[in-house]
Image (cartoon, rainbow, N blue to C red; front, side, top):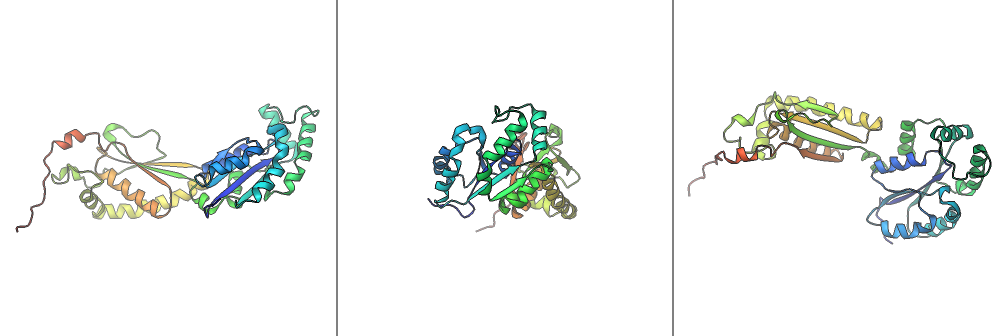
Length: 306
């Protein structure tokens, strides 16, 4: 089966309470196709369906599978014989930490019935000893906060290109006359820039049209603003990512949300795409007054004779 160059399969297993669910969420934030509590016997068929449409996959297989879990080593040997980039992550933690986590959540241990909770933890550790020995990476989460755990996953186990794409950026233009968006992390007001609305030739167009973009972007005050604005955004993005943020929404507003904010938002989105950031570009109010602008005469440049 052909596999893309960046394809990878992460099998996440380990002790109950060690952070497998949190790890899976981190992989999901990185853009992986994730499955929780898969029966080992179904892994080969699942990978047949997943590749090559989902080249990055993360799967949690653990003792919640009961007797089915006993097949994991055999299944991994079968999968390992195929042309698949398979990596096994084993998570563990100290007994007192696992005991505290189960006591706080009040969830039943998968091996409940082996005596006390500590007895169940010890039985699971013994049951997983062989699979632990085969792990690509063994990670102890005892002293890791949620943020530290995610950072360690990125640094130790997640592909560099996945880490770079770990934060989705949304750039949205809007008009203040229609209200500022409530879901934006950062809001920038560009109403100080020259307004194409007052130019009869530009008024019917939007900030996505070249003539409006040229009017807005090439103005001296805009050039000075963009120099400082882009430096600020470049400074902020990696720091937000470092804090574990998976989505950053920037809203840029002008009066009507049709000209200046659209041109600046589009310019910023293109700039971030060139830096390989995943960007979604939205223009919330660009068509709010479309009917009004459609009634305005379009002034076309005179055509040269003959």
